[in-house]
Image 1: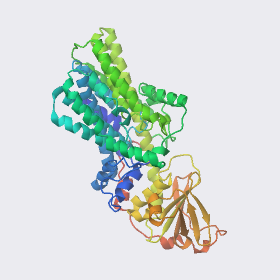
Image 2 (image 1 turned 120 degrees about the vertical axis):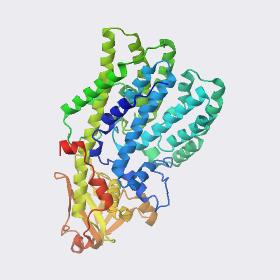
Image 3 (image 1 turned 135 degrees about the vertical axis):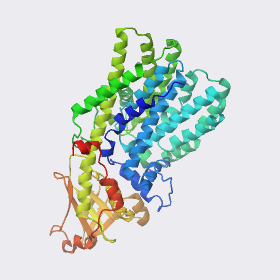
Image 4 (image 1 turned 30 degrees about the vertical axis):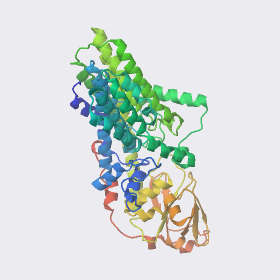
Length: 551
């Protein structure tokens, strides 16, 4: 096996994933995953709550570990960075199994994977589930190689365990599971007599998973149906082709990435981002190529393995073509990028071994440029997350400033007018999760209501209070059997979001025309209290290089 260039990989991992990660907080559904971990024990779900779907039984483990650490944001980022590095290392070792006589290809595969940043969620802890699912799957593939090429029984029995861990975390590997034997079959040194036991374990291990999926699909509703987008054949093919092309267009990752939501404001100056990216790409290319060993490989056997890698890349992308937000490359490429890197590594290594004189400079320049564009895409993502962290910190801190703590009987109504950017409290479930976590009080899930102009929830004024319908917590509905909630005026606290100031303010009174408005006394429901330990951990410790350079 080719030696692992640890220093190179760690350096690329730091630049591509974590240069500004200490400045980043939670984003979007991060808080919901953390909240589900927060309430898992009291709901009797233990370590394995089903998040979004009944098959994601292992998805909460990173959030549970993060909460237990006392540093939830930093712990999630650390786990994410380890998973990112692990994907690069696994790509290196998989490439070594596929092209053992091309050690240069292994180093290229690892570096290309670490700098492959096509996915929208690059650099976000929200991707931790898909990242871990990817790592578990790649471990399963590598363990399969170890069994087929070396006959390790431990590897044989560990393979279905790793595959199951992947599937029960997220569905990242659903598309590639069936075609994985193509990669094994294309590799050299595979003993045919070992194929049958591996095949049996590989295809039998996911049966319980697919039984649960089939039951969920038959039941209708739920996330599995909600995530689907109705597309004609032509539109699906166009989407699929775009996902495939996105694997090989790093200039678009850096310069033309479509944004689900507009950026909250640039923090890291773009000239500095590009300087870092170009230097990182040039140094990495030099480190990889300067002592590249010779090669005995011929083009013919390598083509079959590269085609197998391309087939798995396509299979990884295919399930996402019909899902929501695929047009923004949301969680679509965290696995496919690894197979794209494998498919690229062999021809580049072959070209380097055959090139002479100025042609080697062309190959080296192409490698450096590709890596630089990938790093530039990563730094664009980091800047995006840092900008939102600052905006969300201001927004959430204003909630705690207006409402330090609530009485045990108080009800919170959060009113949000139309606005042009993504809030931490963008949806009702995000709002409930943040309020409960910041106060370390799970009961606030059923005592918090978001009333937003752009969301389905609507509230009407009655004699006794506001009656609100829509987007109520499923857990709260299960407890009281109601899809509407009465908010009595005498127990009510109202927060209003001010878009121009990006902050919430306490509504001291209600309009006089509101029936029962005189009974609204929010200050009677407020309690003085310093920030909870968890609130401080979530909001006060996201300070790193960007905060030091651009406070």
